[in-house]
Length: 199
Picture: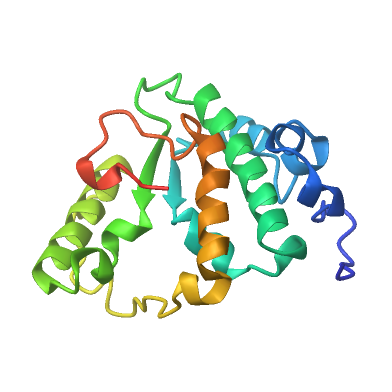
């Protein structure tokens, strides 16, 4: 573990890698890493309109991008699932803003703004990106609902997750994710088709 001079910070715990997702999600250490969502929401919602945007990336791609963390694919998958459950429980407790009655959170599916999702079709890709940007602008009450250059610096990862963790690794993760059925990915209220994320 890397030494961190910040005494207030709760660090990654080694035991998470072999724990169940339920054990991780209910632990004090996980609930405070890197920030306690409940305390954050409670503290800021008193003074501001807190809106949460959940950004979902393919589980297999996420694990593959840091496949050596936590001691390997299986352990890293354990940790991620624990935090996905923790986040889902938080989202379920705060589905609606008590003051406005509006949804307290929404979702962005990263795969649905990637060019490879549309087989490189520029028009479909640009349309999907414009749609999600318009939706987010409306959700956040921004005055401007379009952004012509927002994706100019966007670079899609060229990594091929199968070549990184192998077919056995991918199959293991797909099996691991079956235990997340009904938990992740969450679906926001009045979700657009573009917000229906795959695992």
